[in-house]
Length: 408
Ligand SMILES: Cc1cc2nc3c(=O)[nH]c(=O)nc-3n(C[C@H](O)[C@H](O)[C@H](O)COP(=O)(O)OP(=O)(O)OC[C@H]3O[C@@H](n4cnc5c(N)ncnc54)[C@H](O)[C@@H]3O)c2cc1C
Image 1: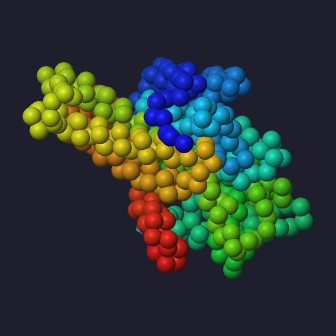
Image 2: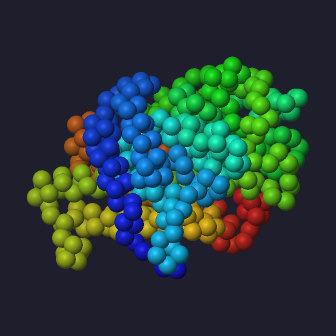
Image 3: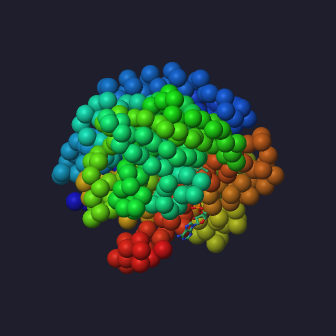
């Protein structure tokens, strides 16, 4: 089965619609919500309705992470030769366009959110029906558990027909605005990572207490919430997947989420980096520097030569990311490629944004251009869903066949 690098024909409409939204709504409001942190971007409400319409018509499987998933939630249709381009590819292509517009606004799109990927990865049919299509945030991180998510301390204790959750969750993207929060908690801390399960908590559950909203370097349009779970009771049917603790399966259930979400976060970095490259190309042209793709880089002005190097780096990140999403749609295990894509795109995004800013000189550093904002926004994409270092660690483990205990 060969990979075709053209945008699949059936997604051309999705890509052009996403591009239009990115231009007309996201770009148009980009600076406004960078400056007005914690203000809800009401312009996105009408978009939610439009995206629902697109989903119903089958034009998209979610322009955000809404219906993404290589698990139960994945929809895939056969293209020629048994090659599938399904919801992972559709979401990725849509996200790249929207992130070109504004990644902060993308992260706060109503009814999207990475929590849906967590639901799609492990939910059963009944749960998919109950929670599908809702705006869901994902709460893993705690004050004492970031990269090492196996060390979370939040507990879930069965009491009659309900689980009682206690603990603290920090840095929850869309935590204040979402309808649901998918919370990772341990059924039995003495049994290690196998006992960690995900639980769907309604945002208005009185036991889920908002502590504060973060003030951030970038993606200021997106709310980032810290919570205390104080005897937070949820129906036992809200535990996603199996309630059994299976030591052999270890972390496999909840961790599957990341195989779906990492290529998407990589796609966001690719979108922001492309925005930087396009604007820098224009600014270079305004300064009289033309990039000549037919001449060797060393024969061109240093800025043009650097620009060509950045574009080729960007292309490598893009292709790795497309591969990871394509593998998910074709039901091929993609943990290695998902982490490779996230590591490569996260670093490329950050490097590209900062280099473009520098190439544009003082114009790049000022608020008159969005370059300075993109340089701030892009950094998070190399941090959440697993930092650069953690992705490299995962890639090393998978390539060397080492367990997490053997290679830390
Ligand atoms: C804006 C924002 C939004 C977020 N959204 C969410 C969300 O929606 N849901 C959620 O659950 N979390 C979210 N997070 C949390 C994010 O996933 C964590 O910040 C991230 O996983 C890193 O954890 P940490 O901050 O505790 O850093 P640490 O784990 O303490 O790491 C600190 C540094 O050490 C490095 N490091 C750690 N371990 C190793 C190792 N073994 N080898 C080499 N280097 C290592 C890391 O790469 C990093 O550079 C968000 C964070 C931010 C800033």
